[in-house]
Length: 418
Ligand SMILES: *Cc1c(COP(=O)(O)O)cnc(C)c1O
Image (cartoon, rainbow, N blue to C red; front, top):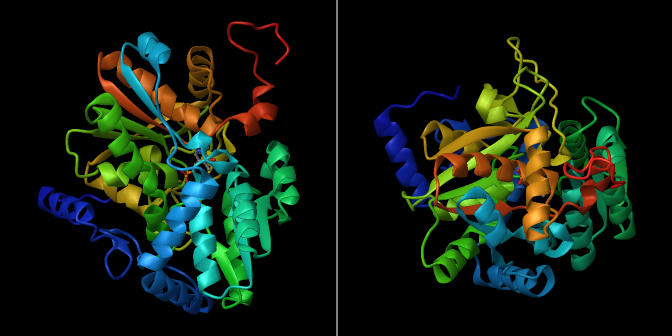
């Protein structure tokens, strides 16, 4: 239910997107994006925008960023052929292994990039928000690496279901600030971090964790995460002998998905599919399938697609995975849906759990619950499109999900203690 564009508008916007011309000078991805923030926050955003223009694409910054990605994060991450999963699905399946990146997920690419930027902008401390805890861990690690103190805002609900990650953040030297307001998950944590940023926009750098929020964050995060798709594109050509027929990535705020998809947008033959959390059902409040079921609106500074009721009240979400449990989505995904370049589907809790087991059994990889949603949708697609080459963004590893997984018996061993 996105903004309706004419065929001409859609094709112009796709061309602009492939040519690297989006967002435009106003921070817009076609009808979406922009900056809807209180007056008090405008100087902080303008300062950040200027800082990005001054540093991000300089040789000096890129050299430092690439060196950290290689030597500290461990990039390039592997592209793994999945022979047994391929056989089970009747497809040719390749996995882009962000679970092998330092701290166990793609989030570190963005965290170290922004931490390096914060340093160049003269920040004295970093604040961040976190949902699943993965971004909190990545931020804590990146801050230690660049030598800046870090405070992480985290919803009380998420603190409970992601306990191992809270301990990791503390161990890495960050301070964890529990957020008891609002939905007590990611959305409330972002609000709290923004409130804190206003009080000291010069000394504090706000390190956002996904391709969401007001301009320039969706752009900045995309630029830092695009390394995923750049590597995957080269690797699959070298290892498989050509491009995939389809690529899948899970979508919470949309950072790993835009990182994988952005460098593939110009390859018209690749079908791109973003997978949101279908939760327990289609009703409002039962899922976090923002693009699949939401409507246009402003959330946290950006005009995008959001989950809201008929009065415009943002609705709480449900997903088995904390990292997908968000009522908004990055504005660039809203555009890519509107112009028909990316298709967005939902996979439910049970389908994600089953897909996670499939991957464990066939390939010996315990993937994150977020990531499992991409596998669930890919297996369905494979059943309808036999024999195709499929690329899956394996956004992170599942160790952090053990407390949740413990509540669900293993399918083929229902009596085993997990
Ligand atoms: C945080 C997280 C996600 C969701 O965030 P995006 O910004 O949509 O990528 C997906 N997978 C893992 C492993 C995560 O930690």
